[in-house]
Length: 410
Image (cartoon, rainbow, N blue to C red; front, side, top):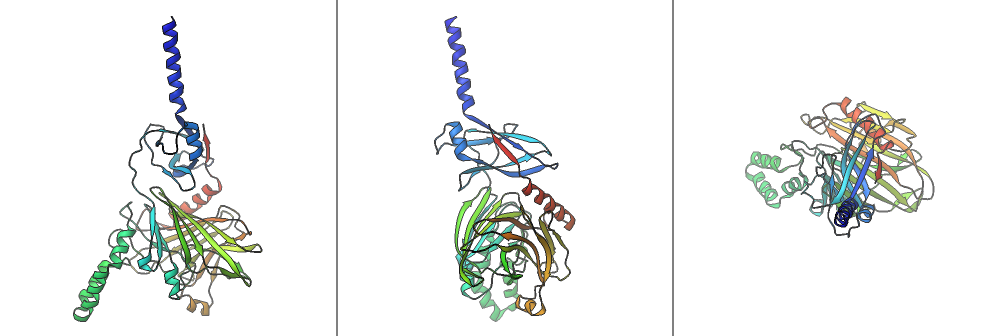
């Protein structure tokens, strides 16, 4: 009898020990729409404390079927993983000690000093760049974000595209061929250019001295204070599921004060068409309007400006007749006071490389706060084929960021 009691106590003890090495995360969806592969964040410190782990211990994340889910530990101490939750439903994930599988890199980026300090990043769907100090040193007004379309692959493509575009030997050969065989030079130039679609995507978007693909900017007396290129950059997360970069800018002159410094924290997650960006301004003395803006390349282009629901969209014609359409968008989780199209005067149009204006979402920025918004695009040659589908995506996305998933760690 004593032996049986001892065995039962031992079994209970082992069960308790095993149970103490498991944490469940319940994710609840408050909306009447499915949330598919949406990134969930849980404190890594909470996980290690509840599992009683050392900081160097390995973990795995499991779904309801016991299958491993890709995850990443971020620079700010979070475990992130994609979750799928039914409309008005809940899903439970398990975190425990174990050896994680190898995860494909879906979000990453780097700085390209050889291309005038471009900061370029991507995920499995979309790719972007912000212009850097070397470009500004040339006097170019690279205010806005640029983008690269992407299709036929979920793998990173930017590094290969930059390598081909910037190859010194190819450039030298093109220069020589121009003297003897201009046709061959032109063909070789097309082969190496990322402005030509070689089957995986391209740069077919015009930025110019505008807000481009979604830069945020302060306004004074209805005039946009255009930010120059970034001054300093620091990559904080570099995959496999999240890319995060911190950009700091040269001081702006705002209402005569030349000490206002802008900082942006840009985050792109796997599976999303949109970047999350938190913008802050140090030394700003008063509340001012702030806009999230998308450049217009047609005065009467297809625009949706929905202040009540917090999003804007625009169908961009791209830079060539065979490059399809780019569906642009931005969403703001907080109050949008106004959303509107603002066209340039004829004089300003000449100053901005013949762009026609912006579609703007207008909010207020309070000193000492962060302005958080989302911006990005889709391409009609990739996964979202029509403007109607994109507008539905943006309307749903705006609802999601205003109604976040709730997360309970058990």
